[in-house]
Length: 373
Ligand SMILES: CC(=O)SCCNC(=O)CCNC(=O)[C@H](O)C(C)(C)COP(=O)(O)OP(=O)(O)OC[C@H]1O[C@@H](n2cnc3c(N)ncnc32)[C@H](O)[C@@H]1OP(=O)(O)O
Ligand SMILES: O=C([O-])CC(=O)C(=O)O
Image (cartoon, rainbow, N blue to C red):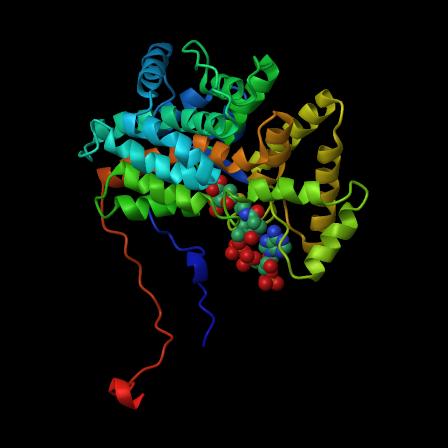
């Protein structure tokens, strides 16, 4: 069998998009033409979601209107409210989110329309509800009712407030908000592609998002951030180099390293590394940051691989007080803004996505009756 040069659809252009662009050689990422380095830390997650879903960075007036739409749209539907307690007892976080978004569809007033205005309203509701779903899920499984979201606070501030139960430090909010900005969109990554494939059948936005959540969950994609933390927790602080070499010798991948598109440093990792260092030092115990730095050096020396977005996101979320099994759900809170924008874009200029396959099975088989096989 000949090697398929496009296995995994590597380098195949599967869609046209005006949402984001990557220069994998230079290590640059743009949202609608804006360099991620200009947005992170200067543009809020709400402004970024508006940029993706509506096409422009909002004016103050537009941001106030969009903010009000987010606040108005975040109330969870009756079906979700009735079932979240049981789901929290029986499903892991990403499974639960997949189920809960599917349930939320039943209560969405625009569920039967793929029109652009309806899609934009659904995009705002899904973006507003996702952090609340994570917080209520976590509250239901721990038995601690999360604090009510404060309409005066940003999505980032409310999320930290609800998950940790404490008034978050303003710098922690700034950092978390920048994390949400950094994870918002990323061209034809696997979960976005899944969402677009689903939407391209003219299925609805919630169905596309359910496909995306199921796809983000995997450890080769968004699930890697949780695995990074589990790796750090499982090795001794003074045994990082040996642990990496042992894993590589066993043929294991080191989670949080490598990327299909970036051939140099992932520009998001540049920000996340600094955040991890700052939060680690501020916490008084930066062991996990220092272990991460060492791991980065060893993986580069051994394999020439750079950290991707998931690597330093892990320690940043850890230092922010987010439970490890909620790291990938946090990714989904941010990526919801991008997924929904891609569904809007797909429906605006749709064609069924249906690639070809290369047949590698038997040919010309002779049919034999069941009793003679
Ligand atoms: C948000 C995100 O989705 S970012 C990515 C998150 N995922 C991870 O961090 C998981 C670890 N990384 C990986 O599995 C890969 O680098 C991916 C999935 C990100 C990219 O995969 P691909 O482009 O298909 O590269 P592929 O898996 O074929 O790797 C190419 C080579 O590099 C090696 N490699 C790639 N990543 C790693 C890694 N993290 N650790 C060790 N070796 C690696 C592979 O073993 C392979 O080696 P080989 O040619 O000797 O067989
Ligand atoms: O683009 C990818 O393949 C994965 C990634 O970094 C992301 O989704 O943010």
